[in-house]
Amino acid sequence: MPLEQPDFTIGIEEEYLLVDRDSFDLAPAPTALMQACSERLQGQFAPEYLECQVEIGSQVCTTVGQARDDLRNLRSVVAEEAARHNLAPIAASCHPFSDWRKQHHTKKERYNTLRDDLGGVVRRMVICGQHVHVGIPDPDMRIDLMNQLAYFLPHLLALSCSSPFWVGDDTGLSCYRLTVFDNLPRTGLPPRMDSWSTYERSVEAMTRVGVIEDSSKIWWDLRPSSRFPTIESRICDVSPRLETTLTIAALTQALCRMFWRLATRNQRWRIYDRFLIEENRWRAQRYGISKGLIDWGRREIVPFDELMHELVDLLQEDGAALESMTEIENVRSILNTGNSADRQRAVYNNAITSGQSPNNALRAVVQHLTEEFHADL
Image (cartoon, rainbow, N blue to C red; front, top):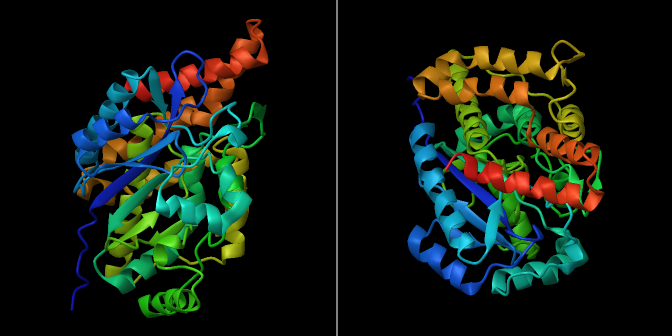
């Protein structure tokens, strides 16, 4: 019996920080802004853990082109409503200079519970991410594709890195966000699982003893969604540029289709030990796209651009079937211009070279992030 083809629908969630348009510091969202966005976006907008954060979620989309139209509208509405209050959204995973100790969590039962459960660790969560859902109706196929997709999570992370600064310091990392997020429980790479029933038994064991109420409190880099028949990639930083968001979504969707395609030919991607993948996860977090990742098949560090050119070629059939080759090919543009972390550092260094103080150079970075957010709207 032929292996049934999933629909490979996609959904994209993004978290944004709100900044004051004059000082470029973080600012809490006024109630009027939250109400206006909620009314205009009808279930596609929500508060986040901190008062200075908001979250949007696309509709279920069949193509990346459809997701572009939806995300452009969502970003535009948030930007328009924020501007009415002299605020601007930025799609960066860490604010370059604001102090996390001065931020306050949203007064909501869910977030009050998080504060009580996680203590001081959750106070530092001034971070934003991008989540990509891919529709896989069959639960066992969800697990099988997750096991294979884990290999490419570092590649996706490297393209997305947008958090080089933290409380005014250049951290030396391209993605500082994960150093904050990894302090929470039930984070990091997902374990390898044999089947959907194995996953369900693990979740049931955790809920039975009362440490979590449901699987939404499992925050792995890649997980079965707790609400939808999807797998959800959660490893990526949020991207200032809309087109980068779409490229990451297109790659995630096409990789899932490639694994399904291999299965129809009785083939599969080799599954490597989590310990080995974690080394590439660290390299992506530290260096972004500027240094290579380890090709565990070749057993050598390979330049990142070489790996990505190979991946684009590998996904030609799948990208064509999903109508996403334009977005996949945009990887080459990211390789040429750098990821967001690279661009932020360039803005900072140029400001310092021109004689600005470190504080003003950091504000120039935030101004740059607001401009990139609005560029594709």
